[in-house]
Image (cartoon, rainbow, N blue to C red; front, side, top):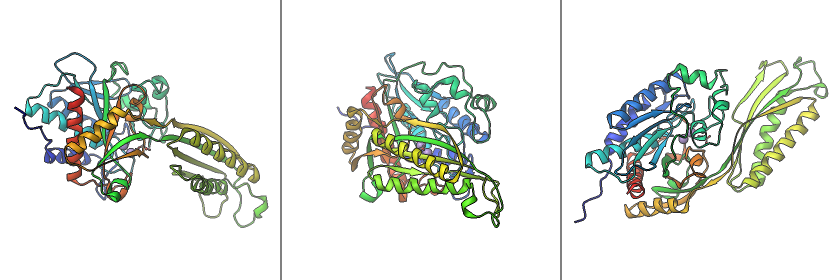
Length: 410
Ligand code: GLV
Ligand code: MN
Ligand code: MN
């Protein structure tokens, strides 16, 4: 006799999302839980306690990733799900947290239903997915999957000058488990779309095809500060002007290239930053993304060349530092099909689409069958305190996650 498939408990899941969002809460319903901050520590303590309460065997590795494993009837590599619980400084309550807490909801549902899977199931949260305090982003998953070097990452300094290794130790999450001490059977992550496509086109579930490539560079421009009233325009070495020209050129070039090319100058700092003083120094970051590696390389080369030209015309010095570089990845066709078929089976509309945002899943994609499930973001808003996903959509996504994990785990 066919028994009814278990369904997740949406009230319990939303309650966990709201409780976690209380840690580092900021005005407007958002969250500031920068990686390895005191708020991150409190969030980690809470989620780790929930993991243990659900009976998971929890380990912390040397970059601070937490993995909770639920045994299967066979000892073999686990089917893994998860995401991150760090946020940008102006973050919402769903980015990352949804994937981790939906993973816990899957475990709670299986515990209640008394279901033992053949393969073990794991729920993980990875250190510093956002990269907002320490670059690069996807740091924990990148080290876990062998794409970033552990010692190099421990030595990275954040925007506040703190070293990753010291901050990890300070919050008590410098674990002892060797990184990547296990390989996953497969990895499936639920995440909010963070863009407008699903909502605008009326779909409940996104079957993610892959993640676009990401290139982050920091430029430091050095000119000469001087009097804003007395210095003729042709005699200026204005670092602020060059920074502004770079931002304008990044926008112009990405529009000219079209397709999936996007460009953002999200951080600028001028020194001395005063109304009547020409800026002697400018610091800026350039975030370039494209689903096509060759086009991404072309955008990098063209902007780099433009920056050098603007600087040389203004007599301004330039130095640059690469903050992050990840090539585009495609997810495994089997995993994309699994998400699509599961969504349809549960009666949800589903669309295949690429991810514009970076995700821990992209680090797993080259090493094991990997996929992602998206649910709509209201107004396409994310990295903003107003980020919102309706409980009905969360329920749909978490049910697809549950059934897809059960298919993988047997
Ligand atoms: C990470 O969330 C990114 O896409 O910047
Ligand atoms: Mn995220
Ligand atoms: Mn994010």
